[in-house]
Image (tube, rainbow, N blue to C red; front, top):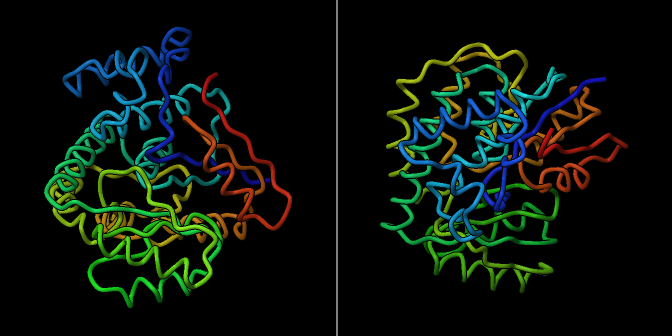
Length: 295
């Protein structure tokens, strides 16, 4: 019985996140205090006492979710993964949890990623929208035929795809998706066009940090967003991570591949329950799905 651990991305943050871990676990407390020093500000104050709006700032959101997830993996007594995967930002949590890079390096990269994405959002305003109940091929076809930049960015589960790109192009695509029979095409409350060509300036900035980072062979395969396939080779992991910001998150295919490779127990580590819901929709066989936000 293979166990897969999965790690959430942006959007799963909540006020008070990881506070119980800090108060009840020595390892968690040490890691969070180390994070405050690395980041140069007390992120714990915002995580524990901040408002939902405070936590929405990308430079806070991404490190906060990464910290919550990684600390859960480090503090769980029975954390022995057969495979791991993370959604977008969550891939960094998955890589650290599986030992492909160390905690400090992972946190620094997540911080660079967050700030670079924030900058890219401010210089090139983009948008994202969720398209519900339209076949994947149709979504891709409409994106390709629209003027301007709009692409399929997150393949979350069959019938739920997020598109991303220039604001006008995304709006035009949404109209055409509904005309083609989509149940809904909803704009998402995000500041930019994540996982689209518009993130190229952020990808280039993050690439410098990734190139300098040291990657090791993980304790188990990491199913990466760019390929949806298992990786254990440090050079391959690095190459896939370099491409991640401007490439789609192939979550549906990642989960299908994990199921094919024998996963029958999925555990989501970190804030929220989004991935548990997606896995339940993707799996056609009965599997065990659970989540842990605290010990």
